[in-house]
Image (spheres, rainbow, N blue to C red):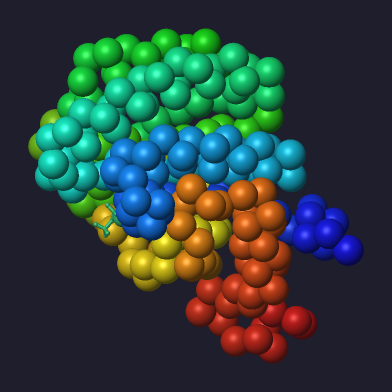
Length: 247
Ligand code: IPE
Ligand code: IPE
Ligand code: MG
């Protein structure tokens, strides 16, 4: 029985988030420069997006570049931005063929102009697609996002449009970049690292975490199915006890 056929399509996560990690190590293992790993990671992005869309997942968020990644060597940052420009440009057609809408979260204004423009164009060209939203986290960090949210909420309080007592869970949620999206129920991280690296801290508060030693460029559809199956075998209690869930 194939992995895919074991998946219960009635109990899919609506939103899956992925920390695509291990490109540099993958390249080193082949005796290549780190950027070779980033280039090969594009195939994994394609496979994962296809697998998610085929299953019927509504939101797939991929952590592609963190705020902290700006601190990498200049040539790696430049090569990553170039790769981003080319990939977005080349994949727009496939996204449209597959009815996938591209979105982005993060401090997009900090991206190089050509990268920002390419991204805007691809988002516009795919805006009418309805099968799945593919969300790229670019120049993203959760602390940055939360600071933005706090500033906006504080300004509304100062302006008198909301009162402090009205601030609740929904207020914060509505001021994050992910406003309007359901929280991810499943977060996958490749490369064996078991940390969150400033990714969706608020939104992952009740997510199930799945860690695989596979390096990102080796990640394929079957690995995605495995993560979904693993998720479907978890008991999500949300603070309650098992007996309350079965009754
Ligand atoms: C993930 O792979 C890609 C980005 C962070 C852009 P890495 O580049 O972090 O690869 P490792 O973790 O060094 O192997
Ligand atoms: C997290 O990976 C960011 C992305 C995958 C884009 P890193 O490789 O940058 O994370 P750390 O620094 O090892 O935690
Ligand atoms: Mg890494």
